[in-house]
Image (cartoon, rainbow, N blue to C red; front, side, top):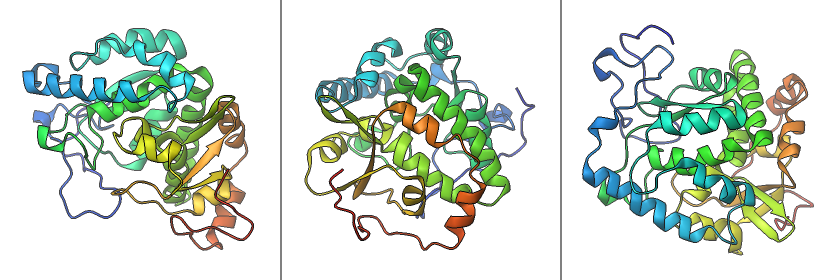
Length: 290
């Protein structure tokens, strides 16, 4: 682990005038890579109860809406009635796919984020929302990160995709293309849909951890659903404060891994001369019914 940083800089994504949540000093315990010890002892009984209620509510919605890989892996998180110790999860996760979760104080800049992923370390925010934020929170908290993201890291193919994404992100940062690549993460890891033999299902953490978006993403007739295409997804802007107006659909997780195998340099060159696409807009020939 890197030596402690005197003053790591919080990250802000999307349009917001609020200061980032989380304590980025922690008395000097936050490292230069933004990781820190999970401050488990600071959780209150109310914090644990919030996690329990969130878990119960989301788990009840999963059948028929979440992908099989997620449902099958969810028990690997362990306890449901309190916020888990990250070390407990890591014992199972590392055996399954060689990944581990590491605590961070909140959102972190893109290069440390990419670097952690490239080394099979997934950053998990360790603070939890307040009771008044039970139904909606803008920034990811420990429930979003644990419940939404970590079960999918037990799937070997998806876990390899996330590592490959991180490695590609380091190069994208060097080329000044980090923002474009972040859209691929948004539309896959956060808000991705997959086609199963029994129908469309969610695998993205932003969908799976949301009380309302799970129904909206899978069942509603309102959003556009498009087959995943790298250029299309990386040209498409997204919103952080509403349900998504478009989603991208994959056929299987091997598709994600294979799509990110080539060198992205030509893709970034193509994106440099293509205009961004606003959320919900259809291009000629698109039906939005993938």
